[in-house]
Length: 334
Ligand SMILES: Nc1ncnc2c1ncn2[C@@H]1O[C@H](COP(=O)(O)OP(=O)(O)O)[C@@H](O)[C@H]1O
Ligand SMILES: [Mg+2]
Image 1 (cartoon, rainbow, N blue to C red):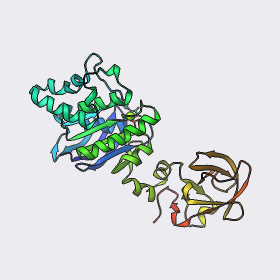
Image 2: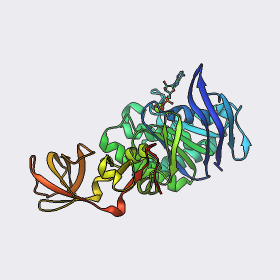
Image 3: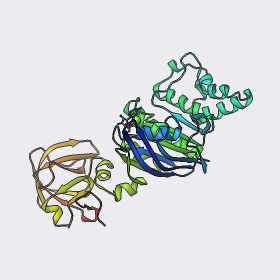
Image 4: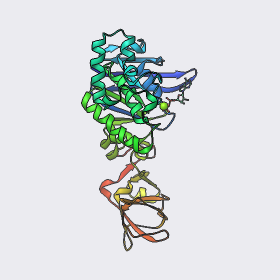
């Protein structure tokens, strides 16, 4: 079981409150991602759940029991950090066995759990190697293996892929998602990378300055961001936010339109602009358009083979079914 409930949980360091009181429910078996810019309190929130930080106020319940005052080892959770913290002189097998050995678990049970974890993580052939003889991704898997054998109620990951190069990150992202499917155990995953959040999460918790801006599935956040912050944070390239007269026509302070929801034409359209930088990705072209009132530059996603170049005049037409409207406070209208 891994049902975690935060009730009015607050954290201050001295006079500085980094997390004002917040409520959050994490259901058993859910993959929850905490995402937000650097310094917004993601690690602090995770460390509060793990018991590595004391709460200033509020309660944390794990599987219906108050865990607020419990030390980390008594919470039944396993944390996986960005730095793998493996013992370099020990084999993979011994690294994975370490927490079980410390707990005095019978050798037979240890071996059973090591075999199962190694199988789940494709490490069976590497059990006799030392961490120095493994790639970054394999080392990260060993660190996860050491968490799996504890059979925790939930896994807590703090930016576990930040040390890996881009290609490995994509691979590990899928491995962790697959692992979640296999184990069906609650996972809480912290990242500043909205692509990781979108691709891995059942439920995303968007944080800014210690405040939960929105909780929802990836597509809920994409389709209906509650405010301008979430609108700009979720989705890549970012949603265009347009102010002024164009927004007023829609009875809004700001209108938002994603780059993929704008049509480009060289002959006709609603807004006229000039192509600035055009980024050719092969599959897509991201064009940064200047001269559209209220938003400069405005980003448009077009096909990979689109024939426009720097300096060309283009016409843009937003798809109004995908228009987002925000009031003067930046809150979604509707
Ligand atoms: N031990 C600490 N003492 C004082 N301030 C801290 C401490 N740990 C974190 N903070 C502050 O709390 C805020 C949130 O930090 P953190 O949770 O690490 O953010 P994130 O993980 O989202 O980058 C930051 O402003 C940080 O400086
Ligand atoms: Mg952090």
